[in-house]
Amino acid sequence: MKPPATPTKSDRPENAADVFDVRSIPGRTKHAQIFQRWSDLTVGQHFVLLNDHDPIPLYYQFSAEYPDTFNWEYLERGPEEFRVKITKLRMVKVATPVMPPTVARTTAARSSGQRQEIDVRGLEPPEPLVRILKVLESLPAGIALHAHTDREPCHLFGEAGQRGFQNECREQPDGSWITVLTHVSRS
Image (tube, rainbow, N blue to C red; front, side, top):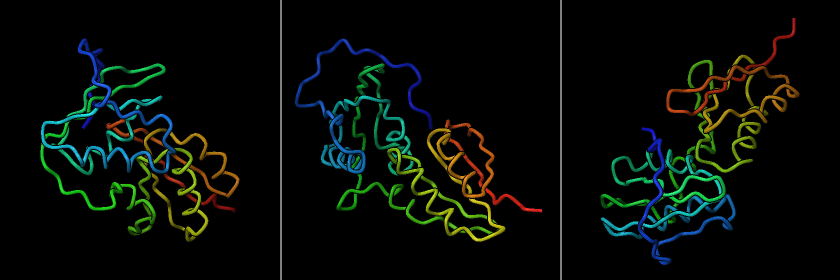
C-alpha cells in the first residue's frame, strides 16, 4: 500500500488542538507517542501530524499493523514542514503500552534456511544501522542476512565492508529496500 503520491494543501484552517507537533520529540519515543495519540481517538476523529521530515516510515507502520483502519492525507509536504491528517476509520485494540508491533519484532532476526532476516522499517536513524550491525556481529558463517529498510542503507555499506561483508541492495515495488549481506569469501 502506497501513501497518497500527490500532497494537497488544505484550504481549511487547522484547529491548534488537532495539531500534534512531533518535531522536538526524541526519535526513540516519537512513533510510540504518535500511535498512542491515534489510539486515543474515537472513530471519525483525526489529528494533524506536524513533522520536519516526511513521516513515510510511520505510514508503513500504520499500513502493516492497522490496515484499513486509518486515512492518511498529506496537507503539506515540505520542504521544511510536513503536515499529515491522520483519521481513525475503525476501532482498534492497541496493546498497552503502545509500542508498534513492527518495531518490537525487529529486535531479533528471523532464521529461515541459509539466511536470517531483519525488518527495521519504521525505525528512526541510526537505529536501523545499529540493529543490522548487531545481527552481523553474531551471524554464522555461510548465512546471508536479508535486511529490510525504509530507504537505501548507504551508511551500512562501508560499515559492513569493514566487517568483512559484501552487499547487494535492491529497491522493492513498495519503495522499501532489501539488502543481502554475505561474508566475503577468502580464497
